[in-house]
Image (cartoon, rainbow, N blue to C red; front, side, top):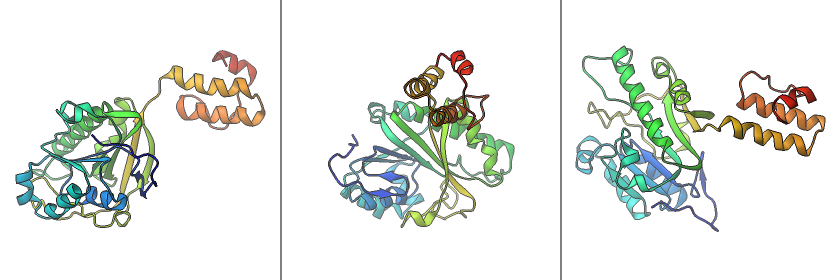
Length: 266
């Protein structure tokens, strides 16, 4: 089981640290996982997984072998045959909770009869994303996040990752540009059975970071506590900013007066 490190120097690479329990799914040649492991100097906090079997990887992603050796040598738990449609029931993963679950450039597979603009293929991609978000949500520890990296140009923006996440009770915490150079040694792979070990062009790419939505009761109780302790004008503005972020129907930066505060029990 991946362990959070304590009392050790925290090592970062982009959004990720060796203090996080990290699950990576849908890995191609495992170069992204290996990149994190090398940056951390250890991979005991990581689980790296692929949909393909270890045997299939040797054919589809022959470049994976060196990365797998590197991961094993650093203590990474490597799993094969992990399907996002049922990963929360995987015999090993079902016993674990994670701080970050990562799926880079998910793809439902190529078809000689369909191109990326076709509605049928877009729907397949949406179902894949929905399954990942739904099952990943169940595997998060307290304060955990699911990260999905996608191209955000047409037709990939038609996958509607924001809408899918919202339907599942996930909130967008941050959307950040994905820059390949931030991850030395990472090689994005096509997968899908057609020219699997080839790269694909990275254009407008972003990492979407989602976390679990808070219940309405918790949202108001948190800001209420701040209001009770300090009724200064500056604090009232801060409260309204928080309400504006979490509750519909409020404008960011507008102060609550006493009448409005009473409406919400503040």
